[in-house]
Amino acid sequence: MKSCLSKFLLCSALLSTPVFAAEPATVVVHYADMAQAEYTDSLTAVQSLRAAIQALIDVPSINSLDAARQAWLDARIPYQQTEAFRFGNPVVDDWEGRVNAWPLDEGLIDYVAQGSAQNEDNGLAALNVIAMPQFELSGIPIDATRITPALIAETLHEADGIEANVASGYHAIEFLLWGQDLNGTGPGAGDRPYSDFIQGEGCTGGNCDRRVDYLTAATDLLIADLQEMTEAWGPDGAGRAAVTADPQAGLLAMLTGMGSLSYGEQAGERMKLGLMLNDPEEEHDCFSDNTHNSHYYDGLGIRNVYLGEYTRLDGSRMTGPSLSELVAATDPEVDARLRAELDQSVERLAALKAAAEGGLAYDQMLAPGNAEGEALIMGAVDALVTQTASIERAVTALGLSRVAFEGSDSLDNPTTVFQ
Image (cartoon, rainbow, N blue to C red; front, side, top):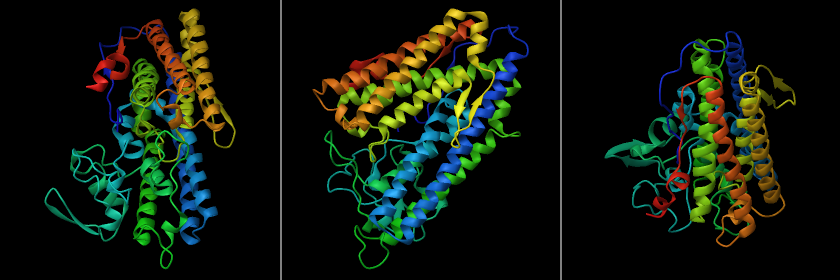
């Protein structure tokens, strides 16, 4: 679960009197409005996923499983764009590990291929709670006869304080819909059969009734978590209050989220690290082979924050007062440079996305000796790193304090990755 619960570090206090009087206030209000809209869209998409999952449960078939998988893929589009609200906003960062934690020791949840659940650092890596209605956790007997959202949230998620024990969120649901991807750096995603959801005769994988219970409980829990975050950015929410109470601090939160996601999280932990290790287990959406989309919409979300733009699920476009306008008023060259670099990173992520959709899956790009894949990934990594320097320039242009963005050993100290 690399960097899922990371905190940002402010290096010094905000500088004195802001250059702008009203403009920062309108920018942070619009930012909060965008956050509320994006989390609302994420909630709506997961509610549609819940309906597709119910249809799968009611009539398990290849078609209903494919429809549920597509609903999951669709739900990732608005959510990934929200990730630019992390790091600068503790209300999001403290919550995010419940909904988007990765990678996970999936054997905690369900059956896996023989030998693949071994983890000497995690005694629960092969628990398989779906097959285990009674078990012990830290010596305490646990009754898991009923798989509920509370059981997942309060007992299983990060059980024993181990981050790899991811029991909730998008990736737990992804694993249940696709199963393991056992193709390594070859083509193909997970291929769980629809019969794993047949309750009664014809059930494969065992415990289909409990698998259904886990899938519905995890999805209901994700809906509740997204409802919580939607409210946090509403009129009386803690997220909105935090950025609007002090607009200068709100601006810094916006830029912190942009820079930390761009550099340490996406360029480093999600992209360069996996390439260095040639490890498909380092994919963000590893079961579904959706990582190319995950990366693309993260990059788009960073640009959204700077431009004050967001295209909603219904196709309508939000626009409003932006960081770009504030930066342009004090240093037009920095603004022009940053906008051009944000465009370039989105273009390079789009090229990676197009290649994956054209048949070169992201896990194939990670294969040793795949020069085309390495060039696509590193092209995007380099663009993300480059724009981060201009995000720092924007901080200076706005008269804000220096800020330390999230880092990654893969970028800052690559020799330690192999130690």
